[in-house]
Amino acid sequence: MHNDAHCHFFSTEFFAGLARQRARGDSVRQLCEELQWHDPGAPEALADRWVRELDANGVARAALIASVPGDEASVAAAIASHPTRFVGFFMLDPSASDAADRTRRAIGELGLRGLCLFPAMHHVPLSDNRVHEVVEIAAGHPGAAVFVHCGVLSVGVRRKLGLPSTFDLRLGDPLGLPRLALGYPHLPFIIPHFGAGLFREALMAADTCANIYLDTSSSNSWIRYTPGLTLDAVFESALSVIGAQRLLFGTDSSFFPRGWQRGIYDAQKASLDAIGLSAEHQALIFGGNFDRLFPN
Figure 1 (cartoon, rainbow, N blue to C red):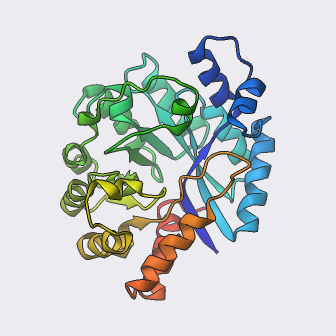
Figure 2: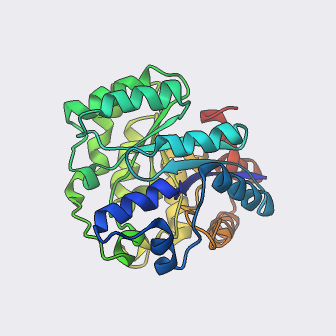
């Protein structure tokens, strides 16, 4: 059995938010039909489907990310249905007037544990006082963590629906994270996708701060930005800089009928086998580190 530190919970409210942005009067059902994806239904039903999917693939636990600001309740409902299987993360826009209140409610009342920041998406640099305010709230709750998306940011569903993505990639530099992370040494910070194209910078940030972790999620197609780089080499470099204890396996799975992306697990397992990583250290990456950060 293993864990997955990075799955998106594409709830009905997630699709409703996309429909509102399109301003065409589409229903969630119409949007899903256009995408050829399954309508998620109620969050409890979607959570049940995720449990069946995880069971079918030998996954013990997974982080579920509320993937639009304001959708904390959907993931909270999933966790309430299956508290031993899911850890709740939520996307937050720190520029929103209610960002601090949302963070307090999500982590306190709703029991979510991962605050997800997307500086390039929301145009709020990590040095901004509004970011510090919400991170301070997370730091006051043992067992919480802060997820910070860095590097290239491409939201496939937005592209499919023709929605603009006005991201400022300059704000996604991992080198902006150490100053923040050093201020909260007991709070874990997670950079997904090995830094998503800013791998060198992600390694430098993590080497500077012992509380910065990298997640291995997605197809890691950012590798194409560095000619000659391979997934094997990415793992070897990450292991040499921060060790197996600060790598979290993830897939970036999101919608149905595709479901859990077994191929990503297979590719990463093959890479770790190819470089000769011990079973003990692989167990940390594929599950042990996640359980240590987010114990049941």
